[in-house]
Every structure is written in C-alpha cells, then in structure tokens.
Image (cartoon, rainbow, N blue to C red; front, top):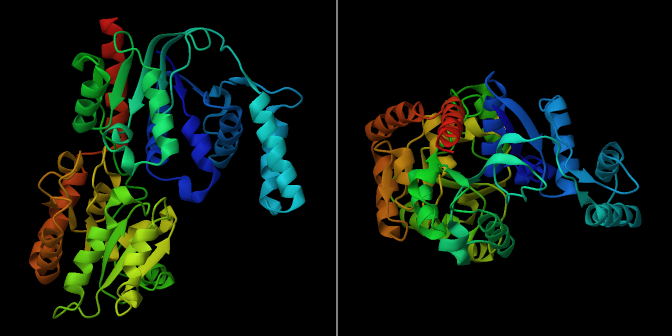
Length: 421
C-alpha cells in the first residue's frame, strides 16, 4: 500500500520545545508506529510550506534520519537548495534574532519561503493522508484516496477559545475536503460526531483511531532520588501538590481550577498544599495571572513551571496528589490519559471527548461547576484509599490505548476506504 503522509506539523512544531506538544506529539508517535509496519510503502512530505520542508529535514536529523529516503521534496526554492536552507536556519541558533545579523537571516528565510513554488509530486499514491493540514490539489499530489486527520472542531464550535491563526488554519483544512469523495480520520467518537455534523460528512466516510500516551515517556515514577531531584528543580520536592498540565490559555479553564484551589487551600490538612501549573504561556493568559495576583497570601503556593521536557514529566505526574484538568472542550485530551499512565488520580471535566478517554477511572465534573471541582479535589485529597483505587483504575484504563493500536486502526481504515472505492 503506497501512502504519502503530509507531516508538515513535524517540521513546523519542531522549531521550539514549547510547540512540541499535543498534535505534534500525536503525529510523532503515530509516524513512529507506522514505520514499524512492513505492509506500507510510506512517503513523507511537508506540503504546507517550504519552511515546513526545511524544518522537517531538521526534525529528521534530530531523530537520526528516521524518515530518511522516504522524504519527498515538495518545493522548489530559487537560488538555494534544502541543505543550504537547513544550514541557514541552524545559524539562527548562534545569533541574536533582534541583532542586525539575526534580522537579516530571518528576512532571507521569509523571502525564500515566499518565493518557493510547490512542486508536483511524481507518481501516484494509493493514499494521501494529511495528519493536520489542508489537502492539496490532485494535480499537485496525485492520490486515489485523500484523507485528513481531524483533531477537534474547537475553532468552529468555540471560536472565542481559539487563536485567530488556528481558526484560519482550521478553515483552510475543512475547505480542502470534499465530503462526497474524501475521507476523515478522527481521534475520538466525539470529534467524529462534531466533524460529520458540521462538515456534512457521511458517517461511513469517517473513521476513529484514538490516540495514546507513550509508555516510554509516561509511566509511574517511583519515589526515589531521581524523582526527588526533578521535583526539587521546580520547588515541588517534599510537598503535597495538585497538578495541571497544559498550555495556559482560556480553553483549559484554569481560572476555575484556581478558584477551586483557593477554596480548599486553607482547609485543615491542606495548609501546605501547592498547585503546580505546568506548561507554556499561551494567548489571553493575562486574566489567569491577574487572578493569581488577587490572592497574594497564596501566591507562593502556586508554582508556574513553564515548559517541562518529556524526560521529567513522569516524575511530576507521579508525585502529584491528584491531576486536575477542567478543560472547557477537548477533541481527545491527552493529559488526563498521561496522568493515568503515571498512576495519578484524575479529576477532569465532562466536556468533549474526555469521558470516552477516561471512562470510569476518573472523577468527572461539569467544567463550569467550580464548587463541584473543589469538592472532587477535596475528596481525593482526604481519602488515600480512594486515591489508590483511582490510581489502579487509571493504570488499567490507560492500557486500553496504545500507539500500536492507533497505527493498526489507521491501516484498517485505509483498507476499508480502498475496499469501498
């Protein structure tokens, strides 16, 4: 089966550690599993832009040439070649972008990207599958079947919760789809229902392949010197703490979590409790910081770690008394699954796909019910037996998800699509 995967996101999100989250992680792990199969003839391209192709080459270098000869060049850049562009981007790492030399390099890259022209790809593919970005014309990318993975419909359902650039990108993706001839793969039944309803897709042209949390990254971390050293870096060693992990942005509903924390922080037994918010700062985060500022008495008990590398996440998840994720909506919701992989009790919301991910292994609360969120956290903190039971249930639930199953489901979807064509 000859398959071309548009993995533009692997390049575009590879640019900084802070962007290598969510969809990037899902793309990377799925690609890794698909490469393990011997029933696919895979090609990889960055069809979104020349910059995406340059960054994809840099990503491939960072993973020891995993994509290698399977990479398909999709761009012609006048006056340069891919190797020269890679070296130019590399040079940015040793200069100040705001200095004259840095500005010159950035301007040169922007001009090259603007002048680059899309290349018609050679040969015909049985399947062309974009893992995030819009499908390209059939003249440019010949393929018997065209598929897009849809991660969520948030930009349509809740545009006020999405950055404008993501709304524009999502619109471009949905406009590229032809409901009568193209196919979609979704990460949850919830996303499939949303996408079919909003886009007018027939139900039988949409497939579901749930995501997973990779056990090489997310696993229980025992309480020992290594975990203590990691927690100490973030001021968490030897402390009881609640944890939330996400980009700090409105959709994650963190003000509700803060107010729930304010409600329980002064109660007996919780006087030393911390709240750790792990993740990069996103858009419209100022109200969150203003809310923190309203309680100077608790400011020292709210830990903002910023981005945390993958190698340290298991320790932080495992060390928490509970993981709280009151998101207003999720197409899948990886963090609760990651927390369950680490054996951490999860309190999360009923929004979107989260209930189908966590099953009965977590306590579910309506996202706007702040009193209910505080009560659920209070319950877990006060009952060690309950926390242990939730840990066991979470670990068992997490075993139902794996990237191998995601890859298997993806290939099964390919075969079903081909059989129906």
